[in-house]
Length: 162
Image (cartoon, rainbow, N blue to C red; front, top):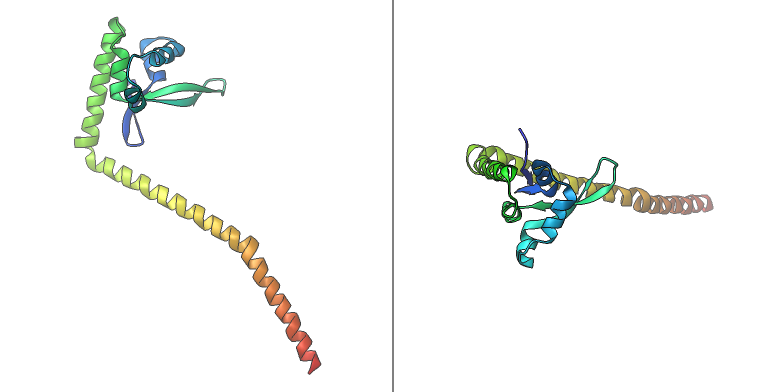
């Protein structure tokens, strides 16, 4: 199965790379088409997000992530048999994903979201614990040890004087 939609940050999206592959076009042509769309800045901001991917040579390259609305707006101008078939496939994939999230696997998806949120909380907790250990081990503990040593010296001195 050719995946043309993804779940990212609880949203269903596609990318300019997937559009280019499906239409057998150069990715740079898809990027240019997105940049030249006649839509409002508000629509563009809501539906197209500039991102990066790593190419086959290990270099970061620009791409767009887009919502269903952004995709539909983009491909409305595409023509040909591939364009027609892709539009059908894309609509079907979005509908399947919608059903998956909202009907068939709603509980599974909720568990996934809950597990992801719990993982993020534990990651933040572990990070804070590491910072606290670092502070205690490198700053607070040496100061406390220095004070103990200082007091021990004072007590020894006092004991010998008596």
